Length: 154
Image (cartoon, rainbow, N blue to C red; front, side, top):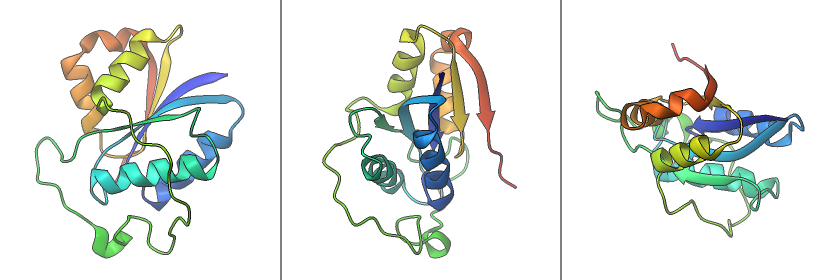
């Protein structure tokens, strides 16, 4: 089984990617970190919690909330395009019975990567602020990251 961490900004596209990762029996997804992207980080975190809850993986996958804005430019909320939740056209019906981790995404990433018994694949489908902060604050994590798979935006 391949250990991965997903760092994402769950709108509808990242929720689709999370759904595939959650249900792929060859992947071991234990941590999802969120970031502001098309909508604010509180909404992307809620979306991550909702999709994990939808697939009944609340006890298996942790969620940590990350950066609320980019490092260089101001955050631009695209709710006018993607809907107020970032998932225009779809609203979860269930309520989530679990919360994000108390520690933030950077600390959660560091701890999970450094405590892993094998190198991790980091899958980044949102802005890369969490990853930039992680590597800048904790450069030693690079030794335990097998690779970073990144979805770039045009």
